[in-house]
Image (cartoon, helix red, strand yellow):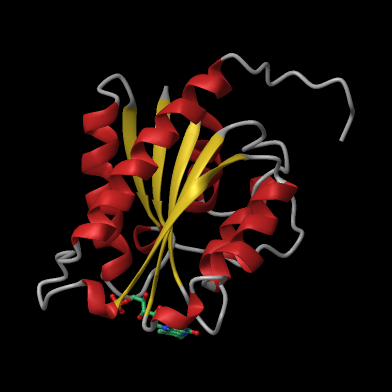
Length: 187
Ligand SMILES: Cc1cc2nc3c(=O)[nH]c(=O)nc-3n(C[C@H](O)[C@H](O)[C@H](O)COP(=O)(O)O)c2cc1C
């Protein structure tokens, strides 16, 4: 199973640091996952504006292909203005709505303060529900107070929650393997 680890920002470093940490735990939980990383900061983005898909640049086409080829996703997002970064939403806008259907997804999010943890519930999860992803009930929200000055996570409870997320993600991945991606309905 191919698992795509998406760092959904082009600014900052803590979101990527959380993704690194959860990657360690996912690798420990299931050694058979073929893990690939997608850092949106490494891509040249174009606004999704309704042009035919072949008219986008190579990076946008590569982004779509990597999402399509993956069997599951760990999504990492910072909180920007009480929501997700525009660049991550733009990446979602680029995908066919069936791309992530019935595939397992776990979320890690980082904000500057502890107040915005519900952004995952009311901003990101509705998009993934629209895509009909198998979103794990576990997600992990971190804030500046969970890190040392080298951006290492110093909060043991956060580590435990990331370990638990990895464990549940592996189970959802298993379930997804037995769930046919063929659909009876057209939409
Ligand atoms: C444009 C912008 C908007 C932000 N808005 C929020 C916000 O609404 N809530 C919040 O908790 N943090 C907010 N932050 C802080 C980011 O979530 C934080 O910078 C990010 O998670 C990465 O951390 P790092 O920059 O220390 O690596 C914002 C940061 C930027 C750059």
